Length: 440
Image 1 (cartoon, rainbow, N blue to C red):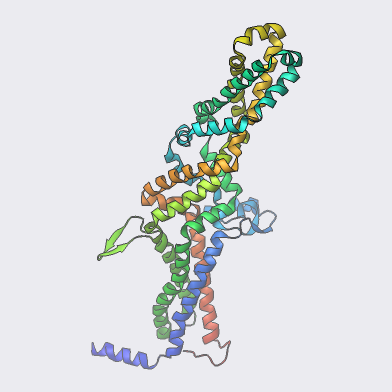
Image 2: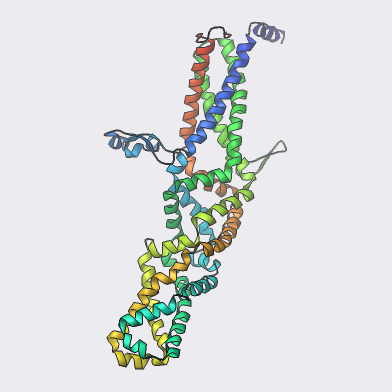
């Protein structure tokens, strides 16, 4: 024991303490820069920035899979795109699988939006235009008959058509499983709005991301202490760059671990250990649900998907099919006489005109921003509840899935910056780039 103490005393006597202290301070600053720039790499730029290299696309196809994951490489470019924007579609897919799919089938989800209220809104919006619609169709198809009908009869036709319009939401509800695909809707929206995916990450996890940057300095400083001991003990110039690789790698690794691991709460020596992000699951769920309800799964976007999405033709056909017999019901007791008076072909033409005119108009209220905003609260409550009910491991996967496959790039970035920091320290304190700084 006495020999060890003597060695330590001799070691301490020969240490340049200013130089010694400079190492953990240096590694702390590098650790802060690593995590700060790592966050930049996560979120920026939204689209690929770089240069296209002829032949690189073909070469990338035979490279290792991990290398192929570098943004832009498979398109033949050298540059960068934020990891989160580059994986926007994947995050949308996970969001559907983990949360939105748990709301039930599209039919169950649609039922929770209170279709009776939607129907009432459609009727209210449609009501002012309906007389003109009926008048225009009838004047185009059989103006003489329409002019000859008494006013009360014409009003009765309008009233009956209005009653038919109310049933359109029921028809949509019956066929919604074939008309609406939430997964496609969400994935396409995320892919086309990469800034929204970035906002999900930042709004939901901003507190943890800020802590990750701050802890970069703490982790770097603490890891720098053993590095300083090794460096001043062996005094080999290349040790610092090599150890910088280790420090940079571990700093990023600890930062990710701090936020996401362990998913479930554990007790170590009586101390609660759990990923910081998981400790705020309920709070984060509220923020996440608000973004999804306001910008992703809105009644406006449901209407757009129903009419203009990949299954829009089915929606239009379904509404038109539902409206044709409705015109018969609207004609009521006049149907037989009208059919005889104008002929079956002309009568069918009127029904077809009504059906086609009604298709676009009955879905228009879905796109009413004010009404959509009212419905958003129902969607927000549903998604918030389901997100809070997620097991911690699923909750982590929902947020981490977009970056997990690419985390190795962050660790590699940390290692490279750590090595660069080591060479910079050697240049300043060993090679004398700035005269007067303390050396070994």
